[in-house]
Amino acid sequence: MRPKIEIQPLIMQRAAFRRSPSSSSSFGGGVVKTAVEETPVVVISRRGCCMAHVVKHLLRALGVSPTVWEIAREEEETALMVELGEMGPTGEDAGGFAVTLPVVFIGGRFVGGLDQLMAAHITGELVPNLKEAGALWL
Image (cartoon, rainbow, N blue to C red):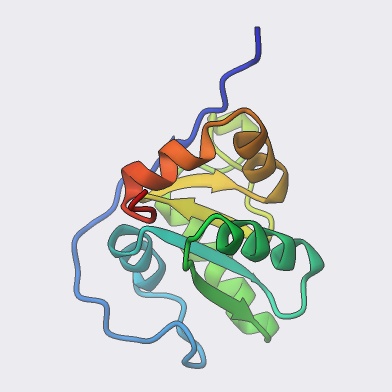
């Protein structure tokens, strides 16, 4: 019997999304929470990351158009990590998730990185999760 991949739910507040993901210093002030809540699939990565390239390629091959944020500066990454830490418990001691990039959210839930996304795809759980989130209409 295969182990079930659990997707960590996040507690989010409703707010208006005011900044575009491509704008500089777009992290902080709940922007990530809002984007994760309002967008079916969000991928956050470092610019030029090979693992993020695979994540985006897999999602696009399945017919999904993810919202992609690419971090170019260290200040943006620091602000992102702070905000992700506020979104839910982090670290294994807290029973939460450790934040490493790339980060994938589907339907407002933290999925993980490339390894968790691939595991969900291989076990057949990814497509139903994408349909439930409204990212696929098949």
